[in-house]
Length: 177
Image (spheres, helix red, strand yellow):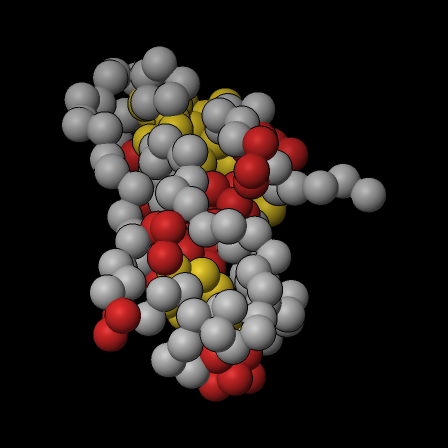
């Protein structure tokens, strides 16, 4: 997520979206938002020098249904913190069905894990027990309410200027060492 991305809040301060700086300036010029925080980045335009916004709030409430957390490759990788659930590797990741599809394993949150290609080849079409492999964590559906996508949330919660406006989910809070 680029530093010029902007967190857009609804009128009630609920996270609404993450947009780029171009869309942010469009909303500012049409007088639809209030800028809450500015980024430390200057943008040059034909009008002159402007400070890029970091967090904006809509001036009116945007009504929308609560989005559902989509099961996708990116969401599974984000849930597993971009680490292989068998060996802990962070490179060359793919998705693995814990119980293979041919054995009746469903395509669900509880049966999908992030896995490096090496471990995926080693496991093959077996269960972890048959392949003599152990999962680091048991896969489960995240307890995440998706105001913004899971990938965006994981990157956004690390930004000091955005963290105050995002709900906290213990499973995704970065570990401070």
